[in-house]
Length: 399
Length: 110
Image (cartoon, rainbow over all chains, first blue to last red; front, top):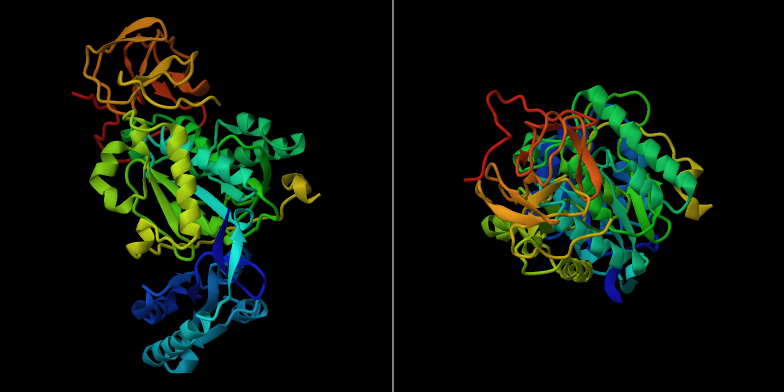
């Protein structure tokens, strides 16, 4: 099966033809937002990094997002005195063949002139992007992420296993599929290890989850919100069991870290817990952290399940919202793409909903707008983290 | 992990044969009686959708098993039909808590 994608100069293929506008410090956020505002329904997306001090992880994240296959061009908005290495980022964007521009507020003469300069560039670039070549794209060229947010006890019974089924179909088509939330896989590590493509990878998976458990124990807080317990989930292990179901039943091909693009199709675990001693605080301050990280790993779109009722979308890549709880679906159907709660009501089987999600992934890859996309959701967050490079056991298929 | 496909309309779901808890798929009032895995279970409290109850006696200190996987440990003896949540079980890894004073996780379905 194929869809029609956008061909970039670096030969990667996207499913959207977006422009990313990136502020490089919070002090440039307002100017960047104002630049985007009139174009926000024309594929111009706001992303950014708030910190004034440079950080290798956030720099890599910004590089990956500004040269993402769904991103056709990128505008950087700098105050002028922040620590972000804007020259290197601009260079990466231009070397990828994408139009790239930098507006420095202190040089441009302040807020008004910076907004005018940025908007003029966007106007010109939108016209330029209309000439982006359209090409046939195989499902094996697609990268898909999965995430759950606002979970309750129905998430693990309906939406998550149904998304797991969709993942199984996608892996069969040789797409690259990414699941994550190692902090929400605590208790599942030995089951996951059995699914690893090599014993060494299995050991790495167990270590990755142990790192997450250590990290959260030090912070004194699990990836478990009071709302999860209100929804009937009692422990982190029970939440994990539900989150784990998102991964489906395929063999696990490797571990990646935020910003690492899978080199081949298969199922990948994204390890988003920072390496080394605990610093910079909570590793997933909200759901969009990991969504942005999977997109930085090249995800063209992300399937997102919710029981309590999350409304988030994302900059750069569309989010397919799968609602686990039939009551929540009735209350919030405008925000939901798939009604997986039908499984609990006996109105559909797990396999049927899994197939429906898979079909929708193909349609969205072909250009169909998701609910959150049509509603204009473009949530984005990027914080400080620190990672060490992957060991060879994490990526057996590259060896 | 073997997955169930669909609910049978009974309002309860035993996810794996060896599980000692079952999940409510519709709101079940106290006194609801069901045949689950060959045993008759009568709910001693109301259970909301997605919440769980014991299908057999569970001794304090033993594992609570759902989908064949351990999801925590009983903090006291639990009788068949009893609602199972933060009041009678805990994580074997990290605690579940809220800072909101007076907030109750354990709420009975009516």
